[in-house]
Length: 116
Length: 112
Image 1 (cartoon, one colour):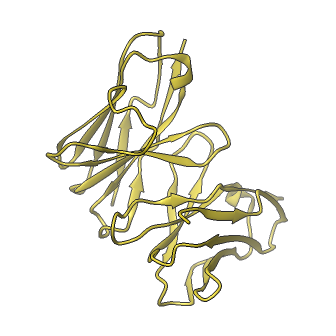
Image 2: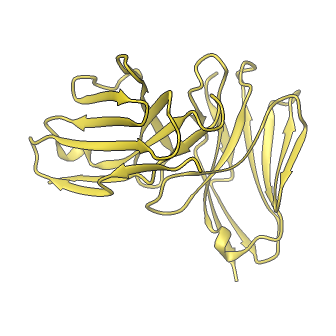
């Protein structure tokens, strides 16, 4: 139980294009989803909090116009990286809350984004 | 005050040994402390978690020790195995936001 999937698992895009990453809770309804960014050999950095049916809340320093988050349903949240640049290359991970109470976050497998 | 300090940065343990990773925090509002295991190229997986009203929690080979007065908690991996080689993150959160503050991570290598 408590499985979270992400699609795609890896993506390569050209500089200036946009890319969408999907995060799905497969066997539970996620009241809240979080989006993280992780650089090689570093910790997870929270980008934003996504609640179904409402606007995402972004952490300080995260450009909300560049990282568009949509939480369309209780099982799906999407992160769109707009006008991607090489510095946006990173490992993006989502997590979902709802399976084990509000404290437990279940993480997706991550999406490796490379911008050329 | 929002930081969670984790040590050591890396750890090498012999097979069958005990791996110990420590975390310290400042914010006394934190009320949930999970540990995650992450393999390269994968998302973190929840190992074990503890609330501040408990001083120790054990699940299989994994034990969390919690010292509320010292604002420290640690993960002990008993009978460490090569398959335990991964990066371990501690985290802390509050019931106000449920946002995790992650430690910097510990890269564990268990030698066969």
